[in-house]
Structure formats: C-alpha cells, structure tokens
Image (cartoon, rainbow, N blue to C red; front, side):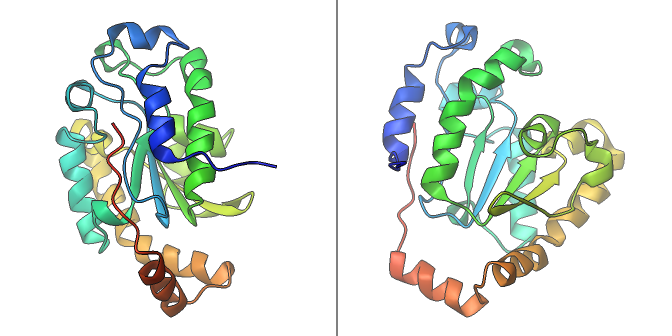
Length: 211
C-alpha cells in the first residue's frame, strides 16, 4: 500500500540529493511549489540561473511569461503546483540527460501521487516525454489526453516563445483554452465546477514553500 509522502519531506530529500552529477553545481535545489491539493500541476524541464539562485521554479524571464499565461487563463500561482522533471540546474541550461531524468523521476512520481492533480500540464518536450511517448510537441500541443487516471496537456515551454516569437500565438491559444479543458476534465471525472469549489473551500489548502 502506497503511503503519501508529505511534499515538505520530499523537498528536504531533494535538497541533499546526490543521485546524479547535477548536485555538484547546485546552489539551491528546486523541488517545486504550490498547494498540496492543487487541481493543476505544471511540470517544466529544469531550473535555470535564477531558479538555482532562489530555489524556486520559474522565477526568470520564462517565469514572468508563465505568470502572464496563468493570468490569461484565470489562474494564479497560488492555485497550481509548479515544478520540473529535474530538480537541479543542468550546466549552461543544457537539456537534461536521460540519467538525470531517471534520478529525479522517483521524486516527481512521489510528488504527483501526493498532490493527485486532475490535470498535468507538461511544459516542453522533456516533461511531455514522461507521459506521451513517440510524439512531437509541435503536433500534439494543447491537446488533452487521458493518461492512466488523470489528464495530461502537452504545451510548449514558455521559454520557447522568448527564443522563437513565431510560437507565441500557439502558446497563448493553448493557455486560453485551459479553463475549458479543466471543465472537461472535471466532467469526465464526475466533478461539477460547483463540487470542485466546495471541495477546495473545505480543504482550505495552504501554500507550501518547498525549498
């Protein structure tokens, strides 16, 4: 029987993790942050310079754009959980290596089980690859699909719009559609919008600082 491990305890383990070489250049690990009962979980790729300095996810330029995208969708950071597939910064912001992804996957799986979100939004191809294999993000972005007992929506990483302006309209459109997809996910899981609001009010989640 699986016992949920508190997010704070996982964050402590991540802060001292030495499972892969990424810890050697770590200033601060970035476990992720958000309410323990978040309905939506955003999973990016890896911490960048500012994240490594502060120990928080998405606090650089891509994070500011993500905040704008969330606001457009009627969501705030306080509503969602945000993290990455790797918890320490890859040197020079390079792509995470397979062994690094594997080393962090145990932590990510435990976080997913602890939070049990209705929807997981993957940001970028590496987080998409954990749930959707053999697909190109350019072909499936913004399309919700059922993966096991929850829904997954692959999206471009916000940083992609900063490097490729042509992608920005697609990213804006995908986030604009997020409220409707959330409504569909709730309906498929037998939850009405009102039931979800009551559930959230009863649970009164506290924002967790996980670093």
